[in-house]
Structures are given as structure tokens and as C-alpha cells.
Image (cartoon, rainbow, N blue to C red; front, side, top):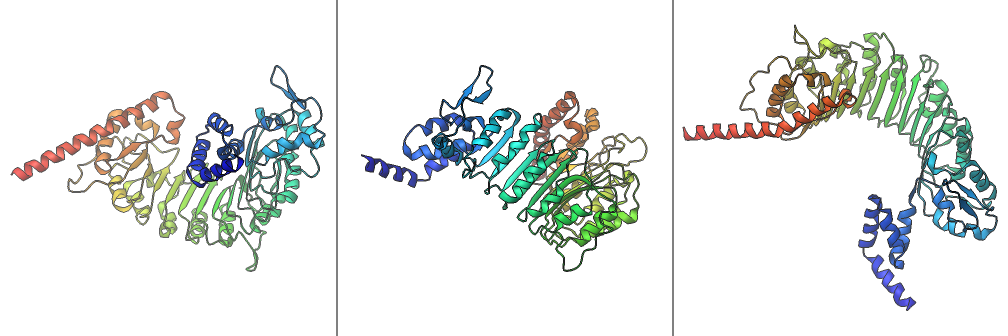
Length: 512
């Protein structure tokens, strides 16, 4: 009988249906179904248990794998040890299931008390790694900072991705422990308060992603840049820290030195464009394709902006650019001409362009060479949304330009002039076949009649138009969102009515 059962098991696992079913149940978070399958035949029991334990948001279920006389739970749900798990047999079942865990997302409610964590550290056998196959660790527990001291219990040599959110200097001790245990770590995110962890990062030589978010923002100084620039595999560096004005002035990069050789994505803040310009000019990576930069200075010379865009243009693979400023830069588009040679896919400009540059002619000139453009955002927070004299905003006529010169465009965010009626469109011009998600300004939606007229024109160019929430709508009152939904619901009727008129026009021409 056992031989027959083993044969049946091999036959069932020989088909892809069982692993595919388990994977689908796991992706749909069907834990009850997986638990039921784990109680069935041997063919699916192991796969179901692997899926059940793959990702955990609490350590308590694992600790309940101790024998019943080891732990107890009171009427409030507080978990604690009844006796110390001192015998090796106490750890047998826990080790079996701990080996299945690949991801842990720790939240406040998913942690046992301090006493439990302390006992766990004391009684963990010296030859035992608690989670030997863990690959991803996310620690989101800030209300009890003392618990973070025990985060090192979850470290393992197999860890490749780690994210910490903490407000304690214990993060330094954990990172120090990681230097010895997690030598193949590839992704690290740290959200912290006033604790600069950058000096410790240079020892993670396999790191490909580093994100540091601090409150308040920590300065990015010469030491920080040096430590990160020497990492041979670092592909993404994102931080809310400001690049100091003197951070790059004292940094002399020799031609033989390693300086960001593999960088692909860069996200920085700063108040001195010369610093980020020098950094871009010194970066050795030939693969940089995404740049996000937020400027914090109140005044900036156009010469500095021009040098900055020239430094961007040297990285020929940049196709995703997000430039924003806390204060309006009032930049003429002519300064951005250096970017025209790049094959842009996504461009977002916030508080960068001067308001008088936001016209059909200027925007058409700026985007004339970006035939691969998929997403375009160009808005200012001080743009007049209801001009009463000269037309200073782009009009819906600009959509014809995008349809002709940017055929891949699917997302567009502009503050349009809806007060002036659009001119008649050339009836012989074919409509664009692709979809367009337009993100209008919230204030414009208060003028429903004007916006409706504008939408009629746009749908003549883009019949598959759909309105989407922009940032200013996302946080506005529910009435504005309701107006957006109402306008969206009218688009199909507009398209159908226009199609009927075109068919009638063609029929009359044929009859004549």
C-alpha cells in the first residue's frame, strides 16, 4: 500500500495542475482552502503548507508550533511562554515550518511581547537560525521601539530584501549584524528619524537598491556619496535627503575611480543645482534611465538650469524624467532644449516651466521629438486656471499635435483653457486608435458646460478618452470626484453620436 501511495503521489506531482492550483490559491490569499488541502493526501500537503507559510505577517503562529505546555494565551489574546523551550525536541515542529517561510511582514500587532522575544533569543539553540530560508523582511513597528532590538533574530544569510521603519538608534546595531550575516543583500529601505545609516551601507557590496527616508531629511554629504558611489551593483538610489551645497565641491573623481558604475534610477532633493550637475557628469553608469529631482531653492539662475539639463542629456538612456521645484523656477522651454535628443517615455515637470510658456506652440515645440512619449505631465501650482484676457493656457487643439507626433501617449496631465471655444477640427483627420487617460485640473471641473464642450473636441481626436484623478482631485471634496465620474459617463454617448453623424454624412455623399 505505501508503494502504491508513493506512485500516486509522483503521478499527481508529475502534472503541472497541482502546483498551478496551489500558486493560484496563494496569489488569491485563499488561506482556508490551502489549509484544507494541507490536511488531504501527501501529494498536495507539502505544497499547500509551503504556500501557507510562504508569507507571514505575525510571528505568533510560528511560536505556537512549540508544544502546548510551552506557551499560553490569556483572555486578552496576549501570548507568553508557560515554560522555557529548553529541550531540543521543543524546536522540532517549529523548525519544520520556519524553513518554509520566505517573507515576513512584521507589524505592531504581529509581534509578541518583549518577554517572549527575550526568551526566544536566550533559548534559541546556538546552531539554529530562526528563519533559515527567509528572503524578504519588512519591519513596520514603531510604537514599541524596544522591540526593534530583537529584529536581528530574523536575520539570515538568505536575506535579499529588507525594509525597516523604526525610530530608534537600534537600527545601527541591526545593520551591523547584517554586515556579517546578510552578505548577499540586494535591496534595503530604511525609514528612520535622525539616524544616518549611510556610512554602514558600503559594506553591502551586492546591494542593488537603497532607499533612505528620514524625518527630518538628513543631508547628503560627501561621505554619503563616496560610500554609495563605490558599490559596484547599486542600480537604484532614492532618498529625501538634500544634496549639500558643498557635497560635490570637495569631491574629485579620478578617471580610474569607481563612481556609480551601475546606476539605473536616481531620486534626490537639493538646493544647489551645481552639486547634482557635477554628480551626473561624474557618474560612470551607461544605464541611467530614470531621474527624479526635487529642487528646494527659492532662486535659481537659468545658467544653472541649462548646465543641469546638459548633464542630463549626457546620459543618453534617460527616458523617465521627473523634475519638480518647491518654488516656481519660471524656466523658459528654450533652456530645456538639451533634452530634445533623448527618447523620452515619461516626462513630469512641476513648477519648472514659466506660466507664459504653457501654450500650444511652446508645448508642441518641447515634445516635437519625443515620438516614444507615453506619459506627459506639465503643471504649476500657481497656473491661472481662469484667464480672462490673453490666452495663456494650452487648448484642446494641442491634442491633435500629440496624436500626430506622440502616437504612444496614454497619460496626459495639463491645465487646459476651457473658456474659449475650440475651432472646428478638420473632418478628414483620422482619430487616434489608442486610449488616452487625461488628468484634468480640479478647478476646471467646476465649469461643467465648458469642460463638456472641450471633451467633445478631445474625443474627436481620442475616441477612447478616459478622465482620471489628478493629484489635486485625489484630495478634493467628493462633489468634484462625482463631477469627474459624470463627465466620464458621457464620453461613450459623445463617441457614438459622432460616429452616427459620420455614417450619415458618408451615406449622403455616396447617395449624391
